[in-house]
Image (cartoon, rainbow, N blue to C red):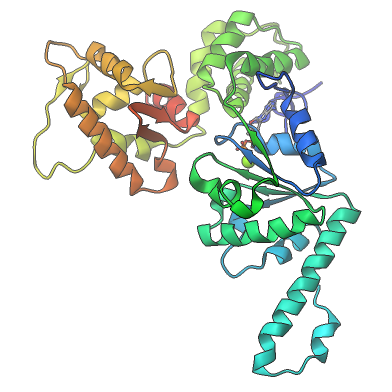
Length: 392
Ligand SMILES: Nc1ncnc2c1ncn2[C@@H]1O[C@H](COP(=O)(O)OP(=O)(O)O)[C@@H](O)[C@H]1O
Ligand SMILES: [Mg+2]
């Protein structure tokens, strides 16, 4: 008998609930697309998509655990040599130092020469090792590498791929991938793959597959409901399904079917894994007013909040949407307020702008939300999920 945690795996490779997705047109799967990209020798594959959308899992699926070598952008601090890391992760001896360098005179002037010489030899060996063993380097979360390092890495990769070194660079959308995609040295040598957010039907498959494996029946309606709450994220889907299993006690007793009345509790239970309390606080407080008083509004939920509180509350409302146009936000806010007085459009736009400026000064976890092109984007689906279910 399978246990629920073997079936639903929010943090690891989901053997039993892996779902294959297709591009809209032409109708080919992501797996096939990635396979094809890797066949083109001399090209670097750039895989881009929002956080937690299955980029790493896709690489693992296509390449397989015996051939994949995963390194993270975070592994490259300033003083670490790219090829040393790439060698070490593949299990090559860390110090490939070659005897040749000892024949060089040990003077200060020779230091540099010695270094580059050693370096070139290490690089040659690593490339050869990868080729001989058909290994594929997945440079994951490239956005974590510091910008100067990204340029240097791109340079190294450019040279290596010509020699049939296979590599995939994985990164978030927006500028973090500029070193690769905007690099003129690499133009014509890139295979580009963009991972789209998951649609409801794709998310549903995870629940249907998993409960099927556990011999529990789940109605289409329930699978659909969970998919909507999962907000385009397969990871959230896996989390919620696992919570549902725990609440039903599926590993302790025979459970026939999923009980719809337990869903909301499962959502709340799931939020215990996420901590966005500080983020919510910062957002609903807004920027420092320097003593100026803000208008206070009464909401249909019986709260008294200012304009920043209204923004946060309205994002949490139904239906959950990760991309909200200004007019829709304004409508949501107006409906939320009890009474005639509503904030005007200008004030609302100003507040959104200030909120964005405030977030720009904060650490990454606070960048859950973005205001641009007259839209509010919720960049981090887990944050929206927390807003909806984590606060009471
Ligand atoms: N194809 C898939 N089928 C089912 N679940 C998936 C799939 N891809 C991702 N997931 C779920 O989402 C989680 C996060 O995926 P991951 O690849 O780590 O995201 P990313 O690398 O884009 O941040 C996985 O641990 C898994 O639970
Ligand atoms: Mg990843």
